[in-house]
Length: 337
Image (cartoon, rainbow, N blue to C red):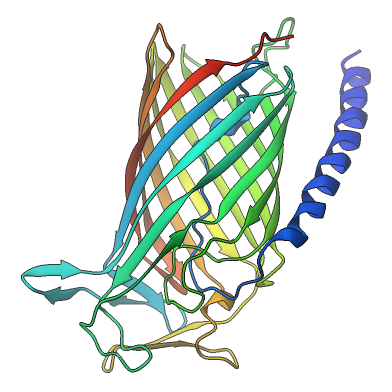
């Protein structure tokens, strides 16, 4: 009986996935073609939160802000360099500040859609670039890469008559449109590529009450820059009434691309490609530890969250430390089916 059920679900999912990917793929020619450097920065919910769907007819609107700072980079084949730049009594590295809006809408019990868009800025004083020497201030500001997608929940562990072993499993067919920040800026806040990203998200409770594990895996086909990426995150969560604590590991890797060159004596920065300033073609790799907590109120179900992530290993990348927070609130727009 279970075998028959799984086969039936598989056929339904494959049919729906083909329709979603086709629709997302057809939207990408509308994207602006850019050649932007440098680091992955697509807005995305952490801790496999997108495995859960809004109720049918429900809109969840959110506002998030985060920032990062990096005082070290990995370049020249994975060597770590200190780029801390003292100036005017302060210490400067590579700094990003950004905020974005997120919207999720429950289409049916099994289907949901999401949209994430915002603004970002990054700046540094550490490098000699395009004739300006450190500690000259260089920065770029613009729209973040825009992420949107459609999600289909394959299994729900809380469903009626669900087997004890069944996890919550959701497939997301996502797409990315490039932001408007500077096209040629080292450590820009995003790759700046139109992309398709199929993704699987899983969550499962086990052990004592409230304890569980999450997993998130996506492949990002960067159509504009051509250096595809994949991201895998695994971790644990603990729910206690309205609180949730999360911690996990995240790996981001660019499948192909060029290397980052840095001269610590002259502070010059470039790439190993035919065009030394084509930072969008870098093969960025990093490993991070992520953690956070959230609290959801009992009456209005307003969710307050805090998130942090720090890179501990990498190549062709900066060693970012991220921290930020957000708020989300649900609105029942239509009566659910």
